[in-house]
Length: 329
Image (cartoon, rainbow, N blue to C red):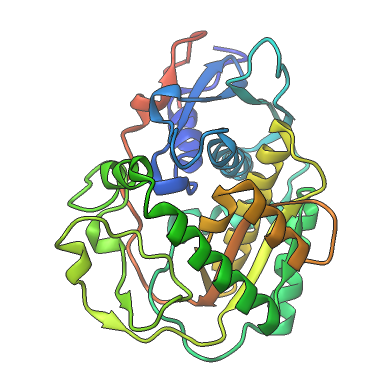
């Protein structure tokens, strides 16, 4: 049918989109396809009201999914025009509208990054002591800037402050049972379709605080093997100038471009975002960048090792009913 995406194309697009990272792998997206228009919605049934009460992390995840969808569109010969949070008052759960049109003008960078979507993963293993090469650091900064965000590398003095903020976060959580209960709902065990399985938690750190966030909540997960993590991790803060819903989506797109660029360079990533879950600590993180703006992610980069990705739900689970989708290839 003219003007319609085929079922095969929809499968390619949504499969790529949902490979994006999300907090605790909640996969908080729904997609509505109408002709060649793809709308990206938040899935309100997959919120984290204790750890993400404002929905900022969900919007970042939606931005990352949107970026993957744009990359996948290039592999199908489509150009993508998009708007972020187009109707914040009337449709707050609609976070991106993407219009796809056949085009001969290819975005070679998106086309190349699409190849790395299946290989991106969160790496919670210790890294070696070799710093990230300067040309890779610059490439990651450029990737963030291309999507309208800023990636700032932290020095050793900043690292000590971030570690202090992690301790502060952990002390606050001692009395916040809702946060612990929420994490236990999504983390640990087999997790065949969503959440973070025990197998993806990585080892426990022999030191504290550490370069890795220990998400383990279940008794068995607290008995994982211990490893020594790097003393001087390569950390960077991803931030945007403003802090509106559209900026959160922007941050997510920038995050995914950074992560795919890193994957292509043989660099993996994990996150130390726990201080960002408290507004006052989040402001302190941003101050370490020496720039105005709003911090969205604290990213630890290391040298990649082969690793499995966490599971995703079937594509059909993410699709809202809308206009017809053609069955042809």
